[in-house]
Image 1 (cartoon, rainbow, N blue to C red):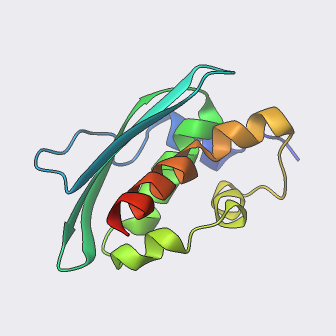
Image 2 (image 1 turned 90 degrees about the vertical axis):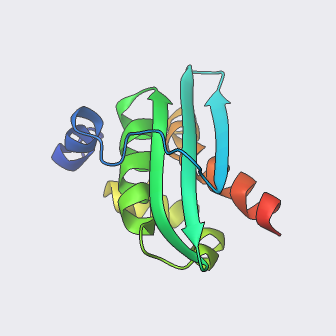
Length: 122
């Protein structure tokens, strides 16, 4: 299977929800020092629903596509869904069954951001 599938490249070249949000309920940044990927996320939550999500940063196609796909998945969902997203969900969104160890850190950087939000919320 080709790692850089069409959907991954599309989300990398044309990321969805790549923006900063003013008045974010939650805002976090994280980085993968091994490869230089950096991501940040802003989430606006109203009445326990994720009203909007925006992300920023730089990195490889995998990290950027994962965050773009995840942002689409989370808008208009209950904030409790943040706790339910798993590594397998990220791989499924990317259309991949597995990734090498170094690429896993890229793909799961977005999950690290969600964990920060969940830990702050709880």
